[in-house]
Image 1 (spheres, helix red, strand yellow):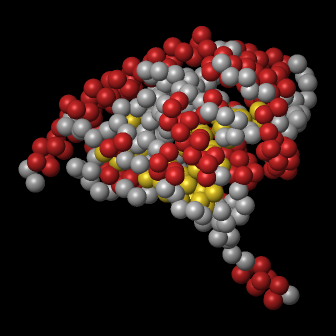
Image 2 (image 1 turned 45 degrees about the vertical axis):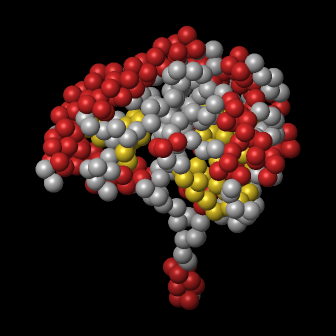
Image 3 (image 1 turned 45 degrees about the horizontal axis):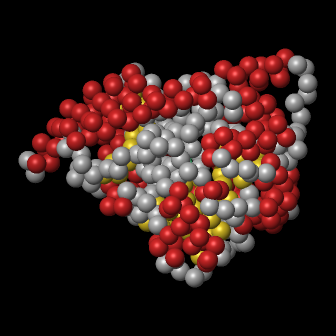
Length: 400
Ligand SMILES: Cc1ncc(COP(=O)(O)O)c(C=O)c1O
């Protein structure tokens, strides 16, 4: 009997569950402590639009709830109206004919990522991840026994990954994860760059996974999709950012034909289907450009206000974002510990940003990320506090 109990208590967590904990949680703790102590916080931390989902999405969800229908599971690949609507989106935005059969609706982009990795790679495969990037790429790969290979980019090339960099990857790499526009840099790849990357991946027999979640949130020109280059890339996307529907957990994949039945089976086993209410709301949200386009204009205004502030603060090393709603800045003149820097900034100004270390394991300690998807008044209040603070830091640094 005791023997049995010992064995139970001796059980240990799996190696694959040993994923890195985001340092951002440390900052959240500091934010909560400040709020609890009665302090104010101006948060440029999270990449969550603060406006509600489009009116039409809310109305559709309300109607579905009042209908008394059970809102049970849907087909594993999603309700036909949503899959069709997503296929239509590619026609509208990019003039592309994507067959509905290649669209799979997922539980947010996050689940889409995991399904794509599961369908494309076998345990133990190595997958290149462009850095700096969204930290969950690494965590998701690790959680399913895949090995991330860091493909580091820097400010000198505007954090762009090139076809040449992919061509030079070691032979054992099986795939590449790219985002455009990217989190945390806002860097967007041109159609020509995407085509070159696509061609290199095809030549080398690499899976190419492109995270297009920030499509729609672009400033000077619209985003190009890798699907224009051919049918063989895996695209992940979702309703969290342009549509501002983070908590609805709704995303999609556009797949090469040969992966569709694999994803259908995996989805059926792992999640059954994406949330039905969210799928119904998603169909309506796809028609809400009139409400959403002005939001992007507001993000642009926020971006420009922050970009104008940085040189006034003596900060010159940053790449102006083409899309997404983040600004990734080099604060290496002030610190080599971005977590400590964010805590100090919070303490001394009440403004909170994300530490770069989550996005770039190589030199993220010299970066922070501002998110600017909030109300303009919040951005202006942040600038009012940050500008004199950064200037005083410059003086202190200059004084040695
Ligand atoms: C680049 C990128 N991909 C994926 C995600 C996950 O988004 P979702 O809410 O669709 O799961 C995020 C979230 O911030 C992100 O920034």
